[in-house]
Amino acid sequence: MSVLWVILGFILLVVGGEYLVRSSVALSFKFNISKMVIGMTVVSFATSAPELLVSLNAALTGSPAIAINNVVGSNIANIGLVLGITAMVGAISVDKSFYKLNWPVMMIFSMVLYFFLKNDSILSNIEGAILFAGLVLFLFILIKTAKKDIVVEEVDETLSIVSNFKIILWLIIGAVALYFGSEWLVNGATQIAETVGVSKGVIGLSLIAIGTSVPELAASVIAAAKQEKAISLGNLIGSNIFNIASVLGLTSMIKPIPVTEPSILTNDIFWMLGFSAVLIPLILLPQRLQISRLKGMFLVAGYGVLMFLIFTRN
Image 1: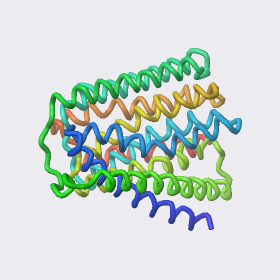
Image 2 (image 1 turned 180 degrees about the horizontal axis):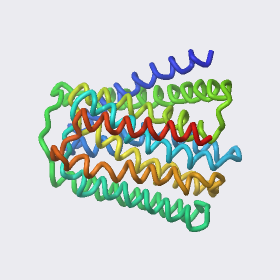
Image 3 (image 1 turned 60 degrees about the horizontal axis):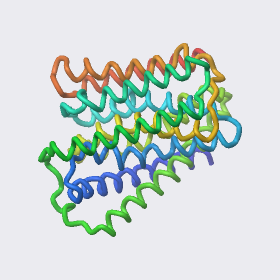
Image 4 (image 1 turned 120 degrees about the vertical axis):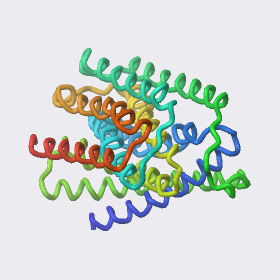
């Protein structure tokens, strides 16, 4: 039965990713802003919903530490697994705004999170509010600068005449499909893991993190296959920012999140910072502003090494 839930969850996530990409491109026409911005707002928020729901549920049921494991693991999976596989589907061209604004903001949020957790081993209500306020400021700057610098990109022109009702319907279908798909996938994967005797710490960092990252994988691979590369990269970077600022920010505002597993601060969060930092040399060397298939393979291989170390450590 667990395997069936995993399969059904994956199918729903693919469907949800398809509808999110359609609605995102249509929205870029309606509001006359770049697809990168749409990818970092609408798509990122929808595909970060599974992490938010898992983390809120954990906080309210007395297991808030799962939220940290989930977000750290999911952010690593977004770059190492999702971006790697997406690049293997097709080389991704990188816009200059990536290293001028998006990447620096992701690194700042990541380092601020580390500082907050390292300071007293707890993410407090005030620290959560600071993270969330930072997200609001970032989105304001992102949208304001994007309207000044509109890039004409190759898109499906038929989406420029889609009605508002259909766009909203697509967004709702996509979000609902992603929610239930993630729920079924995570539950099924957790049951399988518990059956074979894997610890909950490993589940949080690996299976649950991968499960809640499947929406990003579905949306990004579909976008890459359709040559909507701006959405692919924007979605992943935006999702990592949302995971820290919105998921952990909102969760800790409801209930402070303590660090109950020392390995998060001594090992796992440094992997998250490392995967984020390595993006800059990857896009600048040797082929500038491009994440090639070979670079994608490098990211996936790095993620495989991390998973091996996590399972052997526990």
